[in-house]
Image (cartoon, rainbow, N blue to C red; front, top):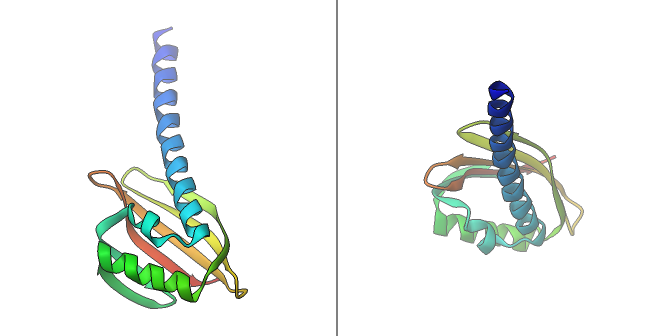
Length: 128
């Protein structure tokens, strides 16, 4: 009886964390689909590693926001959806496909870390 109750509690807690991660990725997907760099930057860490089409640079949160805004101006999104995600304890990631209005198909990988809140540590956008 007690074992079953304890297992139920763990399953509920684990499910709640998974739901929070999914909600987080759902929010990020919405901002990526809209090309909303400002809203997405709310999830940025103080420093973010960007790999945009093979140009890999570490930026401050403010710089990363500006660079992503310029990227979306050059490649306006048509649609975006995450196709895979992993919810490991300390570092989580999701991989999605970004279709641009110009017909580009880009793979987007977002790495997040739970460190004083959930923050994007790395954003990678590459040719699919």
